[in-house]
Image (tube, rainbow, N blue to C red; front, side, top):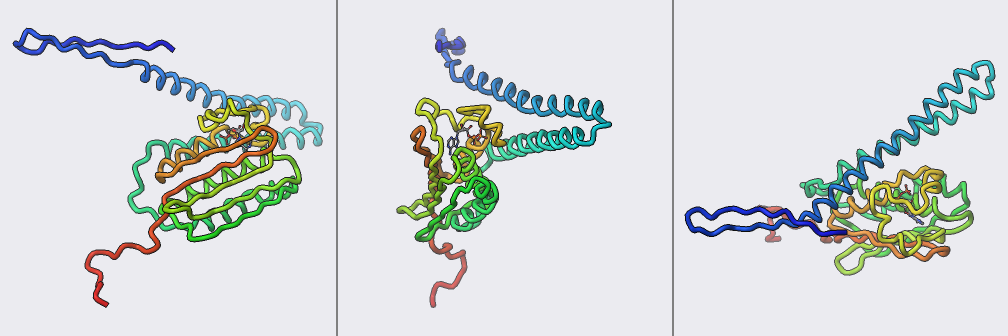
Length: 270
Ligand code: ADP
């Protein structure tokens, strides 16, 4: 990558001096390229199912005298429509959360109930692969935040753990308080992530294996959403992985004070 500068020269009124401003354009160009890629990716992710839908609609029209073929093709149309819905839903979530203002009135949320809700959402997919879901929680794991967003983040992690694991393995979730933070880990015994891909998996639409991701209903946006939800909560997400043996994703969030501070005027003399 070459570095480039925009140079501006401004006379300093009456002094005979000139001010030279050199502005680094490299970062601006990078941001612009990321934006262009993002738009190209969105177009691709939306056009693919729409293209498939229109082909399938033609095929159904031609096969109107074959009820079995009609049933099969309309089934595939439903799958493509579902895929379109999840890409759009993920894009909406991402655009809502990216660069959002800090929460004005965060709620007190127990991460244990967030974990339970996320596990319930993936139980059917896990059962289908005979994947065992185990969760353990220890001390107080209350954080301040938005429950819907935290459930989304958690659900994305456990859904990935199930999607990228073979049958008859285990996905374990632990939630615990560590000093003034709450740590939630999702560990799987799945395919793992190659080291060279690790630092890119949180990028929008980045996938290690695009075919596999699509086959499991992935949009490539799940981890980008997790990362932005964590930033919005002043938290972070990290990953450890070993190809062929499994991955562990960890969320770290500031722990809420055990007690609400007293509101002004509240009687403290008792
Ligand atoms: P996707 O919808 O493709 O799952 P994500 O943003 O959720 O998109 O994840 C990005 C990529 O990271 C995935 O395509 C997959 O290659 C990899 N990945 C995420 N979670 C796991 C996991 N638990 N095990 C193995 N690979 C994973």
